Image (cartoon, rainbow, N blue to C red; front, top):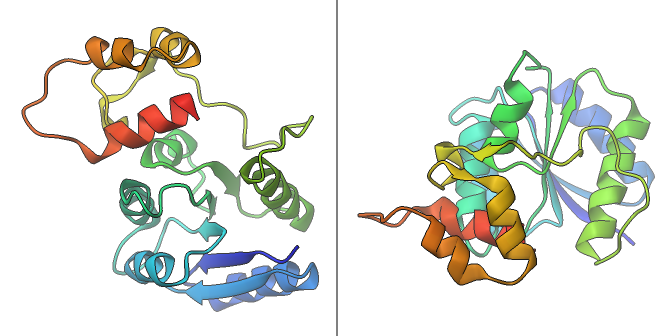
Length: 192
C-alpha cells in the first residue's frame, strides 16, 4: 500500500536518492528543505512517515522533531532521522528529541526500506518478528529531563504503564509549576 512520506533534506542529491528509492516501491514523497517547512508540511499533509535530516537551514532536525512530537495531532507520525551527523551521542540526542529511528549516512537502500516497512507494520498494529538495526529499544536507566519528565526511574514507570497504573506514574513525578509538552507524549509512548 502506498504511503505518503515527508522527506526533510536540504541536499538535492540526497533527496533524489530517496525519491528514486521510495517511488520505486510505490510510495508518494513530499519534499522540504528545512525544519520550519517540515513542521508546516506535517500539519498540512499529515504524512504517514517523516525522514528527517539533522543539519538543516532555518531550524535543525532535532528542534523540528521536538515540535512535531509536541503537537498532539502530529505526535503519532513516525520520524526516522537520516543523517550524516553521526558522532558519538548523536543517536541518543535524536531519540531524546522524539525520533523513532536513526539511520546514519551513508546507508544502504535496503536499510531505509526495512526501517520504513517495520514502522508501517507497527503503525498497522502488527508485531514484526525482527527489529531492524537502528530501532532497538531506547531504555536508559533514567528518563532524562529533556524527554519531558523529571529523573524518574524508567523501569518503575514502564512497570506502572504495563499494569495500567497511570496514576502511579503521575504520582512518581515531582510537582510542576507549568505543564511540559513532552510529558503526555512520553506517557503515551510508555502505555502505547
